[in-house]
Amino acid sequence: MKIILFSMVWCFLLAGCVTTPVGEREYYTDQELLSAGGLQLRGNDIAGIVSGNTLYGRYLEQSKAEEGNSEADPRWVEFVSNDGRVAYYNFTQLIQGNWQLKTDLICFSYKMEIPQPENCFVVYALDDKHYFVSTRQQTMGQVVTVVLGRKNGNVEGLKLK
Image 1: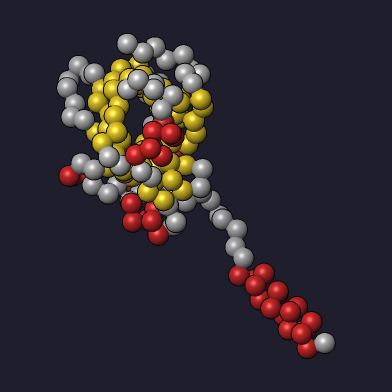
Image 2: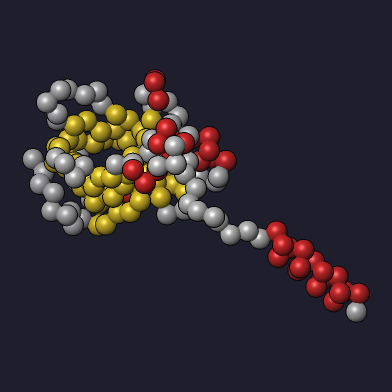
């Protein structure tokens, strides 16, 4: 009888500790991702996630989130081909570029009117999302963008050059 009573009390105590999430949590740094259980992906795992897929995501701007306006973060879609080409669409213009793996980083370069430096990212997986963390000196360790979903192939028909 004591065991049954103890078990019931223990179950009630444990049930009181269960919480439900109030809203989706945003992660703005690699340290926040690691603390939450995020897993840093390695070269082949990164390629498996992006190569040959259409990615859907949004940029994170911590300043907007601090103002309570994270929904205003710009969204994007990008087809990442198996041959190293990308077609990126930010719902304003289509931009062509290339991607490659450099050990455990994914690097993108885009053909723009004003030349831009190559952007390389560390990629983390957490839940059903993928977080791209900056390696640039001025933003090192910050989450720049979040891949919210992906589909196999060029499902949006983005033109590659």
